[in-house]
Length: 529
Image (cartoon, rainbow, N blue to C red; front, side):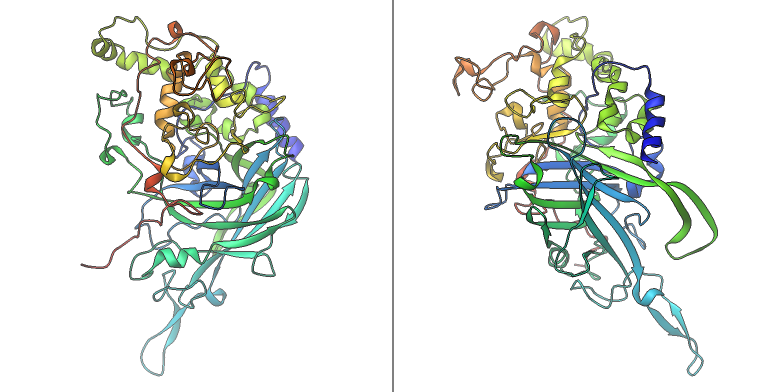
């Protein structure tokens, strides 16, 4: 069935040629018409970085987020994952755009004693036991509390080779049956008086064929900083530093919403092909069975019957690809495609529309501010070799593997040293922090600002990476360190040296310094003060 599914997608894409597609700038929240109606399988962010928790730098952390824009008060059901879906994190460690390793999560939701907690209702001597409507019936402090009326568990499988036909190994933990528990969402302070401690009880040690690690699945506070409303209202801000004030008031998600994280901490040696090939690529997916029949008499957790091969419905690696790069007509197709099929959508990358929109909206304002008279502020180097390097193939000498096949995925050089939280630069690689985006992605990387600057041509101007890229004559902290990467020229990007921003800041100091790094989720209610 997988071959047939691939054939259908290839047929739809037939006739397209060129390079693979490139992401734009941030994350994936309700990004395509189809996935907007399936929030439980909507991938929102993917983080992949060498672990910077002190003493953990021989590991890589992978965090796949799902279920966007969770209102903390979203009861009574809150945000369970889809029992019919499989959620996957894929790793390519030889540059061929195909997965060599997949970590597959499979969830199950069950009621206490199969029917849920019941209360005796009615007059004395004639009571009837009736199921309660809530997920809890008392305060919860421990993982196994009897007051939890509905619990989520999951299994984790490591697959080597093709994700559907490869060798499958059950990942084990403290439970002999290989099943792990997901914490209930942060309903509120009365139900969960110490949510941080309760959630930490769900960080499990795991054993894999290649070593040991950790797994955590649960609700976390959103860490993706973005001026979301303004961006999609025809960029209803002037996106240059100085025209807008960076403020938490500009952030539509951090401090306002939660998300569900699937997090793994794994030895580097579990992910790389060998010590001579330290670069890995990663992406996340969610898939559902191909056929679905709705039951006219549904039972608990059984509203439909599912069958057939798994069909991929969500895909994510580098941020905001589907929102602002892919044309509306192809957004669902992108979610269904694999990295090896990306060349079919090359036009969206080689001739991106976002810079043209920024030119239409802000050319006059930018010219006035800079005292210039540019006839077009969008980069004009077509096809955009700078974007291909940043997001498709990686930077030579940084995160581009030998024989790389251009494809849309996050790439990380695991041999580069960790940057500790206190020293991390929010602008990542272009700020000479080689452990930052787009060399992987950490929760504190301001990916919106980074990618806005890159898409407007920052890489056409000299960047302070000469010493890092071993350019002859380049010396750190001297003018010689500023080099043109040879991807385009300054004339190709008239405003590429400007500090583009969405005005929504983020930094590593706002987040945890230990696995799973993202903060405790916002509670649905707080105790009266």
